[in-house]
View 1: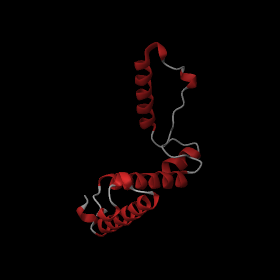
View 2: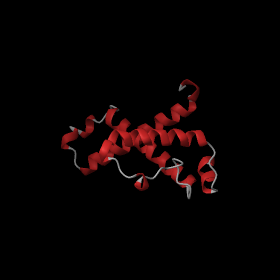
View 3: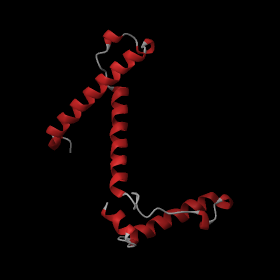
View 4: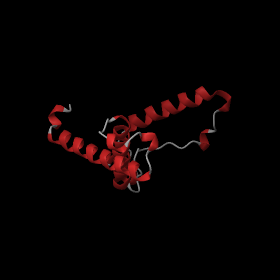
Length: 121
């Protein structure tokens, strides 16, 4: 976030990182050959966060990441949904009940992981 705020102030904190980005961009454009876009049409992001709203951008990315983790959990966690029957035959209410159980289980696992974070690394 500090980096995005410095960009907003017109300061570049890590010129070497910019040089690496430019080198990567040149390599990518070279791979295009004759179909490469004109350099005047190419924009280069100086920071992964939006400099006008870095905190909100970071929060949105964090929430997107948490949601993606929950989607993976929902896909692979084997919840005891025998009372709901076969997933292919669920109606909307049964699907919502499954999602609610999945969210509760995911939240429980996240709380357990936070309580034992020294084991995560």
